[in-house]
Image 1 (tube, rainbow, N blue to C red):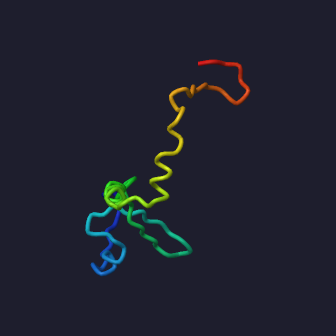
Image 2 (image 1 turned 90 degrees about the vertical axis):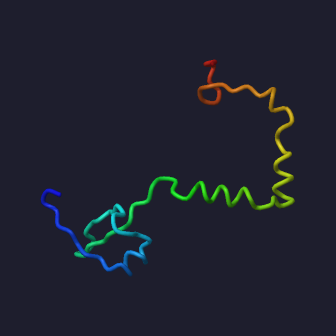
Image 3 (image 1 turned 120 degrees about the vertical axis):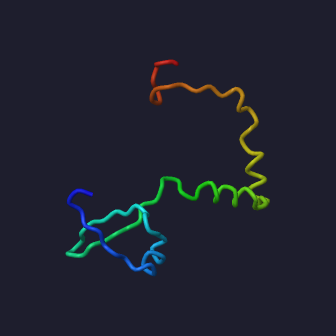
Length: 89
């Protein structure tokens, strides 16, 4: 692309980085060395982690927390502005 040059990276190094051919990389120079870091999608792996966490049984403490704080929530009212502000929504 334009004035760029390709670089051949051994497959074993790509594997160690968790990258494959075509993985977008952040390439920069640090102290006279070329440093290449695979770019990750924002939130990559979150869905899998959420599914894994959701499949785990709740601990007794987690069950206790689920019951906490619901009572009276219906009467809560939110205001905008800073604490002490007289401005109303």
